[in-house]
Length: 331
Image (cartoon, rainbow, N blue to C red; front, side, top):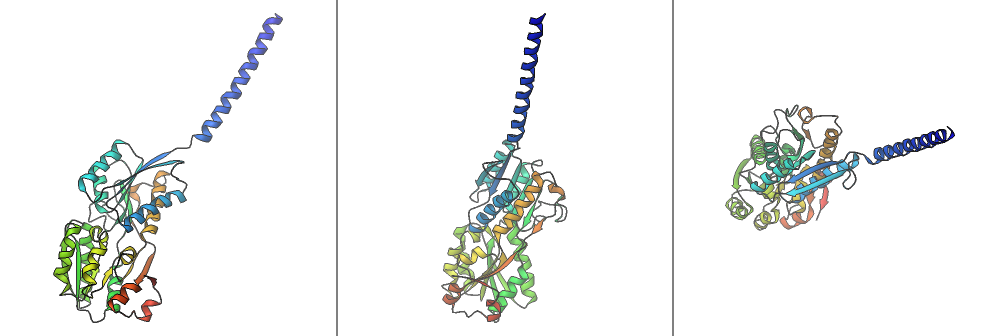
């Protein structure tokens, strides 16, 4: 009888110890069991503006607690402006069942939107979601994609052009015939420029190799150039300004990285900050606070006036004081 009692006591002690061990494992599991997410980032092509948006997106997520190497895995892909690459990358993300996709530039967003109707997608560096058939409306996209727009303050940019070149009569512009976002911008720019009494002459390109010929076809007949946020042009600004500078013609452009690349001036978007804004939207989706279908397309919150003093000197242009006082000057 005593033996049985002793055995029961031992058994009870073991059971209590077992409960303690089990409780300890549960605590460790909870502490280390934070959900980890996998995100795919697809970027159309490598150039400064899109690179900055990419960095900003990752930093925007980090600011919300989603950090690579801790609770976040990122699959970064660059399509090198190749449509078949975009399709393959989109299918890769779908096969890998990523939790969310960030698409940088319109063609990238179109490819992933065609590949999945289930995985949430946030886009950035996209001008017109509705015209690109990515959203039903800007206020209520209606499907699995939302994001930020890089729609430029085109009126303000043309007003800047007029302040710098008050005697200009004709604007030249070159853009990619395959980019919906570029067509949208050129249409808006032309309408506003014509309302100000200016003429617009346009040339389209398919690849960067077409830029020198397109520029040469316009440079003798225009007073100044305007360039939108076109991915083909943005990736080859030195090629463009090699022609325009030689002819003494300035290029007013759509975003600051184009100025550091060789253009004269812009009143435009900070793509890094636009990326941060996009990362913030992605965090809301990952946290389950919002769904892409109900999240309005957002526009840039910050705009910057940037002028190249080096390019102005090369062109022999004196910048008016009322423009200089608000500008960030770069070499």
